[in-house]
Amino acid sequence: MRSFEEFEHYYNQTLFREMELLDARRKKTQKRLWSIIALTALGMAISILLAAFVIDPARDLHFLLIAVVPLLVLMAGVIAWSTWGRDKNFIADFKREVIEKIIHFISPELSYQPTNFIGVDSFERSRLFLTNIDRYHGDDYVFGKIDKTQFWFSEIKAEYRTTGSKGETHWQILFKGLFSVADFNKHFEGTTVVLPNRLGNSAIAKVLQKANLARREKLVQLEDPEFNKYFVVYGDDQVVSRYVLSTSLMQRLVDFRKKSDKPIYVSFVNSFMYLAIEYTKDLFEPSMFRSLTKFDTVKPYFEEIRLATGIVEDLNLNTRIWTKQ
Picture 1 (cartoon, rainbow, N blue to C red):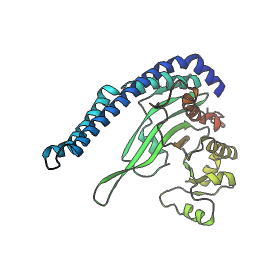
Picture 2 (picture 1 turned 90 degrees about the vertical axis):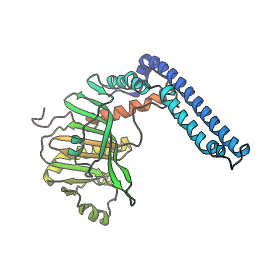
Picture 3 (picture 1 turned 45 degrees about the horizontal axis):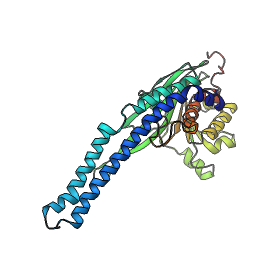
């Protein structure tokens, strides 16, 4: 696994020039944004001040100046930003010139498709989230092979629809974050699901976990107290679940959970491993308000990509078991 020191050297030798060019575009776009905001605010303020202090409230012009004109000015500002202000290719160029190069720096065997993502069929096959999905999209698809292990990941946002008391539609986030699939290093059939333990390990928590009627899989009682602190396990075959979740793998999952410091979901379905890490932000998109020429700005992209690609090494997936090649 590439170190931070190696990446910093690569950044200084290779990425910095591209970052300077992108940062110049960012600054130019930011100036246009502030200009549009200032002119829009000024236009709205003048209209409202004229209505408040100059025009008789009884006249029709007063309503136009206090309500209609500010709205038109705001709409003009939005149109100006979308047609003239923003750099339409900035994010795409950033992903091509920065994110793709970081991915290839970590492993030349990986491929990157910034507008593609893992399909909903794989997401549903994981059995990690059982709610029906009504809206599903993503981006930043990475795929390839590290040593003996095929794996792929992307950002995903899965949502379901609810209806309010007045018939209005609300969209609820089922999952947003990084979703990955890997060829597991053991042959097995069936399903084992490892979920965040949100209830703790009290007697009441065990009763509630066991009575999880939403799942066809049954609660699997494991003897590792540290693992049980972070996770609860369900499986359709207790023997297979214990075979899949070896002592060493449970420790590696605990270590990975501590390393990511975020809720993680893992499942093992018919010799494939699925892993989901929750994030609230878009991982691989630049901020318009932070300099791109500082290493500390670029470092988080490397950290997140290294975390995602490090799954193979962290969980020891390249160690093939018996005849698995």
